[in-house]
Figure 1 (tube, helix red, strand yellow):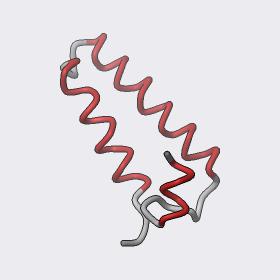
Figure 2 (cartoon, one colour):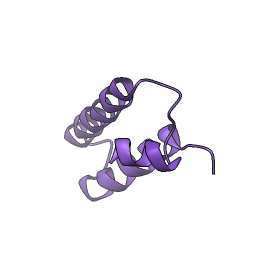
Figure 3 (cartoon, rainbow, N blue to C red):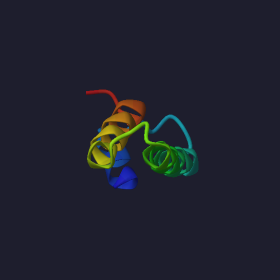
Figure 4 (cartoon, rainbow, N blue to C red):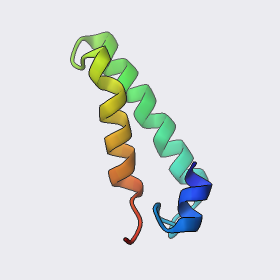
Amino acid sequence: MLTEGRGTGAFRADMPLEWQVTACFSLMHAAAAEVMAGRLDQGEAERVVVRTIEAACAGER
């Protein structure tokens, strides 16, 4: 998904792809920890992670 999005300009291409992948996985782990700690609703976690990744990786439109 990131590679395709970078190719179309939907996602940033001015930073290493490996960094974007690492950031995405880190956000997923952080969301899981927040759910386990009771600070984030499990039903809301996916939406929050997706919106955060979209904002962090958004390219020029």
